[in-house]
Amino acid sequence: MQVIVAGGGVAGATTALALRRIGAEVTVYEAYADPAGPVGSFLSLAANGLKGLRALGCLEAVQQAGFDVARQRLWADTGKLLGDAPRGRPEGEPLHSVTLERGRLVETLRARAAAHGARFVTGERLTGAVRDGDGIRARFANGHTARADLLVGADGIWSATRRVLDPAAPEPAYAGFYSVSGVSRGVDLEPGVFNMVFGRKGAFVYLAAPGGEVWWSAQAASATPPGPDEAGLDDLRDLYRHEETPSALLRAATSVRRPTLMHALATVPVWHDDRIALVGDAWHPVGAGQGASMAIEDAVVLARCLAATGDAPTAQPAALASALAAYGQARRDRVGRMVKAGDDNRDAKALGPVARRFRNLIMPVVFPFAYERATAWLYDHDPGAGLPPVGRVPAVRG
Image (cartoon, rainbow, N blue to C red; front, side, top):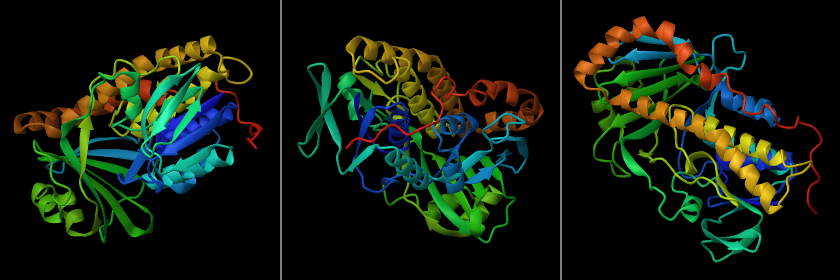
């Protein structure tokens, strides 16, 4: 089976690795040469995503590229502790959440996929695709075309592949938030703890990183999106002037990235047909710290469904159509539930003063009893169950 993967970020690189693991011939076309692309700072991988990486044989490499974060603490704007729980895992789960720079994760996944025989072509942006006999022919912005049996759209929230599947597919819309990430020094924090402050003007997350740095991200609520050179340090210091630790971190900032607008995507009604499938943000930008983990889940489950067609993935039309239908069915309910959780998470970051006071009163009482029960479905899941075990690398072309 010949596969084209559009997009070489987290979703695309993981998909390339997963499909090589089952013997498909994979070429990834990525618009940017830089592994990090033009966006992103740091991200976290939860237990469900880490289990997917373990099934692909690259868990240790990713763990070495980042650092463990064992706990998560939620804080009110007043400084009151609202909740303390394991970060991205159930209590007792030995796999700790891993935090790392997005670029390091992409770089690690690409290197592992390339070592397994995946081919990466940078500077190639997918613009469309058409049927070509029993296959699919992808078109790129520079006029180049390529043919394959299967096209996987891992091209993010602005996915061109999504529009190929359904010209009437929804387009992203500004979600009323923007994020600004940065690094501070000189502020002592407990290591291994991911902190989130529910501020008056949005959330603020921060954690101690190796080398004495503190990584932080301001997720500010704003009805009007800022321009690319707006939302600098002075603006952030004003927005978070009432929150003690965010204020201290912003005063101690040594570097700040440009603002990134946060977008929402309405339910995508078509996420596969018999020759095309979507993975990651192209289908479901979920937020809530699960974007990368859900993309990894997609890649692993897609490979698992394709592997179920026989000893090697087959391009035979009926079998391929059946495998993609199984992928869609396997992911639909879980993704839908995660999208709903992500929407709720975003709404919780923009409460009015009355709702904030009520949350600050009730959450410390309810959280210890409700959190693990509410998240068990998410973190206990092992997307790699049923995937062929890691073994000999399939033969590399040429």
